[in-house]
Length: 196
Image (cartoon, rainbow, N blue to C red; front, side, top):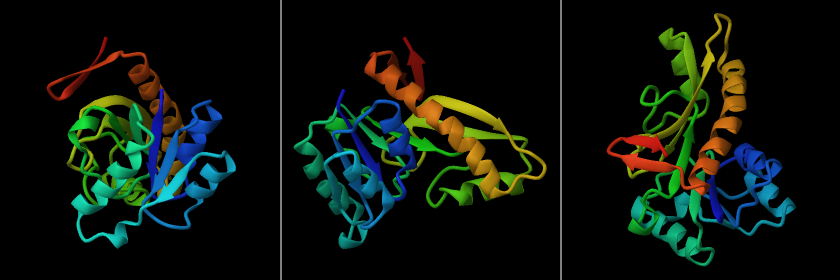
């Protein structure tokens, strides 16, 4: 299966894929000079930078990504710390996954990413958090949920300690979702993803 990875930062999730035997066919970053690109280069993965700042609209930015993806013909697009909106064209509907560091639909949406999520979780007083892998659609963090994993929120947690615990579960959850997709075991029924 050919996987394309979209990222905006350090590429920890990309590294998790590589360490687990998944070598993407391409990595696309929305920011120049991020460490995720260095990880791609180190493993001889074709990589491109399509800076969001170079485009006036999400539509123009998304079109540039889709044009770049054309030459690689991915079966699945994995957003891995991708902090921008990618308007998904019809040919990729149901073929784009995202991971979010909370239990959606809670603590999701525009500007909810990274430590902002973990800070909001701690401040809310909830006792559990976790991560969510979902099919992406054209709204932030809204697409059908594939896999969720839960972690406790400790009384003395900081955004950093909670993030570390959640990320360990992210590494497991994303690989599970990808393998289910590859095996043809996921079916979207309305807002639900059914394992078949």
